[in-house]
Length: 388
Ligand code: NIG
Ligand code: FE
Image 1 (tube, rainbow, N blue to C red):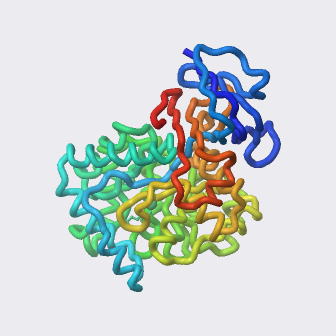
Image 2 (tube, rainbow, N blue to C red):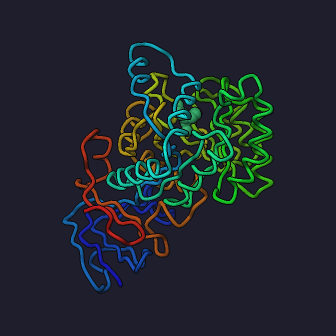
């Protein structure tokens, strides 16, 4: 089954063989062959297909790749957000209140909520989402979260080392034993990645190292939460382990930037966090100018960033973090794919997955130029129309 999308006013391909950051094509067409991109080129040269969709001059992009979310949880923390807006600081300890609400929820309650979030992300143009555990913090509790996440995405991250749970207060090393032993045994079969929150109030560099070593020994890929609340050794630990991504990176010293620039580790920036915690935004310009590969993700979670909108993240990154609109769109698509070490998503090239976003706009610039405006017209995932 083939479908021709034609009369595309502006096509973002992210094809490195084409010009510019976004590999733009004007007056373009794309052929979807089953779940893959079959052909990309000028509309005038398009081959015949079983069906035709005329997008009437609209822009088409790869679907967003949201490489950092925490979508399996119970409850919310609206009260904590209200207190922060009145001046209270964000702290890692808030995670524990979501742990209590998540433990209290049934599988079906969590599954129904998660399905709602998946629909919410699709409706906003996200076609790939990574989902972390981290609100269970016990063997049975974490393994049910990774199993539930694996029902909706292959990009599942085991984050048993999110924070030390209340039942292990003052016994953080014992908790790390649990995470690297029975919890990892129970979770690794359902996960692709392991992650640790390496930060004051969560896990030290040495504890984080133990977590990453254990995960790597089980064949899991490495991701790290680091340098969110202050400077520290998390970024360099991530680079040392060849992490696919180190996320947050709000507070960096020059040595962190140099280490990232010399590595294959993607630096994933999460503007929703700074928006919602009133912290300073990370300096994306400094990273990009140093040669660091940058991704943008939502970090959708009930505490530090309860947005699932990648368009919002793009707009804030442009307005507050020194990114050009083209850099921000690339970071939200191809950058997210790189952060997941995927080459089959985040670009519109023959052979890639047919994950596409049609905007109600003539060009990608409108994503930053029209913040807060719903600009999604149609979304295809694996060649199937999921929105529109
Ligand atoms: O990515 N940094 C650690 N974890 C989450 C916060 C989760 C929460 O506050 O519930 C984050 O910001
Ligand atoms: Fe996170």
